[in-house]
Image 1 (tube, protein in one colour):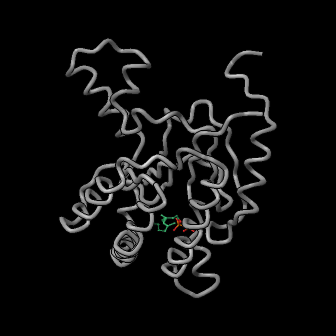
Image 2: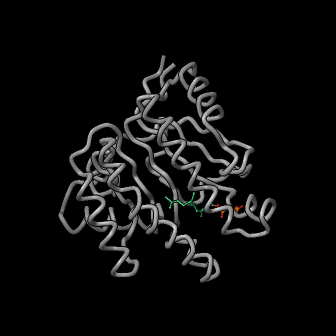
Length: 224
Ligand code: FPP
């Protein structure tokens, strides 16, 4: 049975769910946050040690201003209301991506990371303003600047995911089969599951089915 340390998720389909059910894309984001909470709980039950959630890509800035501010307000309220609870549950929060939001949100993100930094039950990596290509370019720049030898191990040390094992599983909901500039280096050997359901409809049962399937896969890592 395969050990499961790290699950990464592209939470796609909020907008379509919102339009279909409540005639508003933002309603889909609100419903998507409920799924986030469910999947965190279920990850803990499955003893997953790292859960990486793609919440906002560098490309998402191209969305209408109103949708962007809705998403960040949702995140802000979530952290204000839930960070103490996450902390009590021994959950560590880490942001991957470039924190160049409002001073208020940057401060809240830093406080949330600091408060939970010693926790050990599970690490939630929230990918915010994250883009894999620019992460790689920056990593190469830093390698060169530090005069480090260019090899896989050294490059990994300059990624935002340093000290985080590569994902065992990538799940993308929302019936699209693409990686959308997410963890391109780190996903080299991950098992990929494309799920038809939109993120707000994805549930514990769907998640457990994927985990069960993953456990039974023979992972070769290039061997036979
Ligand atoms: C992709 O769906 C989803 C996002 C860009 C945002 C993800 C945000 C959440 C799940 C809720 C907020 C999370 C936190 C942690 C506060 P889409 O809008 O691209 O869907 P579409 O493909 O149907 O348009």
